[in-house]
Length: 294
Ligand SMILES: [Zn+2]
Image (cartoon, rainbow, N blue to C red; front, side):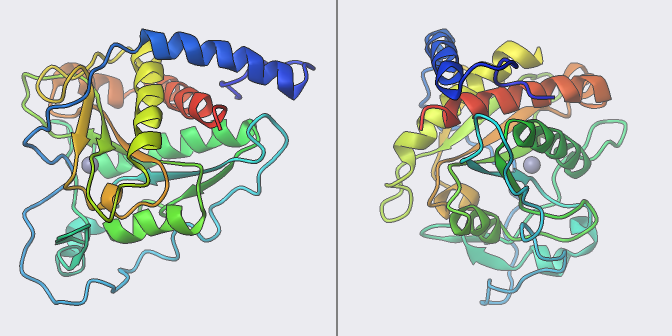
């Protein structure tokens, strides 16, 4: 279901104007003032010693290659979006592969991590995959070309630098990495992570990524029913300089931590298929608002 643009026979220009009003509204509604880096890394496990060569591609198929829609008719028909479903279903049984060190900016980090899960055992990788497919459906319905960084939820990786590389190769207009956090049980809510300044790496994407973060933040806050995180970040916005998936990106990119899987209230939403549809609506809308700025 197209969610980002009103249906009907109106011209693209009219649609764009309509969405422009929405952009103004959403921007005004976003009171976030990002800043304070948090100490926790929602996606990372402590890097383990590994081989020097981080270029090895873990099994898991050829991510991105044939996942991309060809782009259709709609207001986003010239836009390319990369959606990165965090982690992968096979990571837990492939420690050697995912612990390989790969470029993550000035430093190296582990290729990938396993992710978290709810108390009942609903895995983050499965949630990320499910949500990403729903977001893809919505953006494709508006004409966008959408590329996922993995083909299914059965493989391993790809490594964080490869995930970023898929967006670079596609020259994506926007990229978003979808995750769920494994925070303290007492804390709930979502946060958006945008790249901070890392000289030689993120200089070219800091500004547009901030705009992307604001659009995703506003739409998700309004549409998902999940509050801003109360246990980290700043009003649901965070800036990080340590995430390879951001540092290695040459296209505007953010991470969305959609909620805290260790929190009972957030977990109940994430385990609800109907809520995932609602969350996907909100994420697709935020991306569409950003893409219509271009
Ligand atoms: Zn994650």
